[in-house]
Length: 355
Image 1 (cartoon, helix red, strand yellow):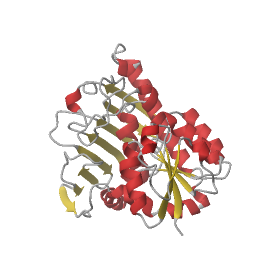
Image 2 (tube, one colour; image 1 turned 135 degrees about the vertical axis):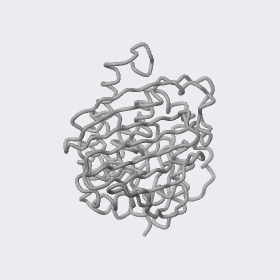
Image 3 (spheres, one colour; image 1 turned 90 degrees about the vertical axis):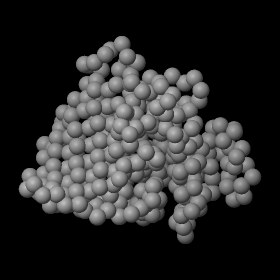
Image 4 (cartoon, one colour; image 1 turned 120 degrees about the vertical axis):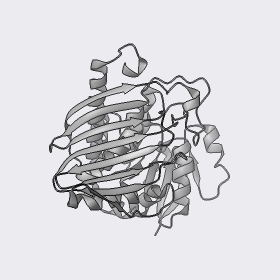
């Protein structure tokens, strides 16, 4: 029996990503769409079998089995809490929340019985799974390098680069994916130490925008960081270096996950996301001066998003998943809060990205 789904939010992610994937997937039936914008709703007015709503208040647990939420970041917690309070399970696009206070709100709402599940693309990539398979061969893990640097990829969105709506910049966007990848590889352990810096050299230069997303309104001025550099230490003693940027002087986008252990090093170089400026995916295992290239699965761009849906129905049915997504989101958002606090304490207080 298909899971009846409402897609909440008809921006780029809801419309171009989740709605298309859900309609193609045999486990799901899209029965409703929700958006506050009349123009967004109008595009679905003539679709048979799809209810069109202006608010999640019009959804009921009798009519839908799951709400896939892809609204702007600042609405994530309030929309999800409203749905959970009506006993409607939620699948939430990242970031799940923008503060530890919002994590508390979601935790209280989930206790009513419905479950919140988090979208997390990086951990569902085939190359990340292959990297994870090498970790037992590395001995004790000592350090992880996390990187995602775009050549030109500042989001073109009316809200994505506004701090009051997005929560922040590249840390809440690409950084969240990197923290999720780390948690999937080593487990969701909180950080004991966080030192970070942020810069905003590219975010207001139009020529550095993402070519695959053309939804930024003319005249928008960004007030978030486009680059974050940090050094962090987990409570289990594993140190982590992080570099993530929406734009750079590099010719191609590069995502890097390098895991250094006592008996070996595993390194994945690839490109997360949908950018056309892609680096060749390469996974290597190095021990005692000898490197071996490890075969990676061939998969199309975006396969990690469909793969999330493949296991989603089973996750919904498992009560053991209640609380898991919120606990991991709390770790992520607490790390980002500490990162921003470190950046504000040390550098360029006059720049909007540090205020």
